[in-house]
Image (cartoon, rainbow, N blue to C red; front, top):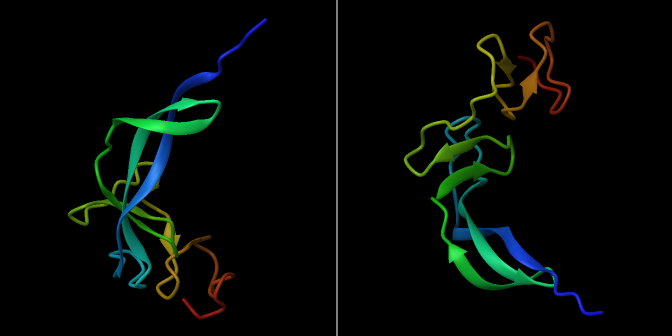
Length: 104
């Protein structure tokens, strides 16, 4: 019996390695990336099938933006509070950030 395991799998590509300022938290940890789809054989990507659209993602606060800097996060609620120092989501009742320890 002979089996061939293949398919199409996504692979995240860093388009520009120069760090940019994140529009949400201000840290210089935002990189321009895109998700390309590859034809794979035995889980090894061989040939690119489709190029994705570039997007900006911050490694610090994990917020995603399109390449022009507009937010792409749709799951966030209006009452959500973020730390002004590190940019992470926190409970609205906190007076200090549990991640960086600074006052809100």
